[in-house]
Image 1: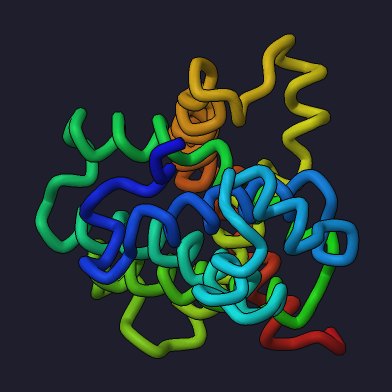
Image 2: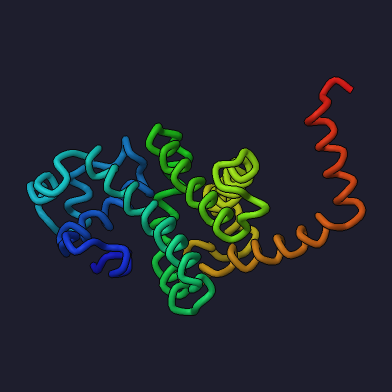
Length: 223
C-alpha cells in the first residue's frame, strides 16, 4: 500500500515503511477509535511487525500524534501553499487533494467525534489555517489577528468539519458516500453553491437588515 499523502506532503525522512504504518493507523483509528485500535492490529494492516511499529512510533499515542500531524499538514499545508502561490483552483492541486482526502477525512471525523484533547488541537490548527486563508485573501475585511477574522475562521472550520463528522447522514441523502474517492467533489461543489447563494443573500436588503439588527443586539444587549 502506498502512502495516501502526496510526495509534496511527505518529508524526505518519511520512509516507505513508516508511511505505510501511518496510513494503516489512519484507517484503524477511523474505524475503531483511539481506544479500540491496537498496535498489533495496525501492524497487521500495514503488513509489518509489531516491533517495526514500535521502532518508528514507540507507542499508540506516538502513532496517533503522527496521524494528527499528517492530517493537519495535508490540508492546512496544501491550502496555505495553494493560496500563497495562486494555485488553489488548479486541476493538479485539487485532483490530488480529492484523490487522497478520503482516509484523512475519515480519521478527522472520528477524532472530532471522540472529542479528545488531540481533536481540539487539530480543530485549532484547522481554524488557524482558515484564519490565514481569510487574512491573505481579504486583508482589509479580515485584518490579521483581529476578532473578526478569528470568529469567521472558527465558524468556517466548524462548518466544514460538520460536513465531515456528518458524512454518514450526507451519504444517506446523496445516495453515495462523499468521502469515497469517486464522490469526493460533491461536498465541495455543494459548499461553493451555498456560499454563492448566501453571498447574494448577505448583500440583499433582508441580509443587510439582519446584519444591522444582529450588530445592534451585540453592541446593546440590554435594549
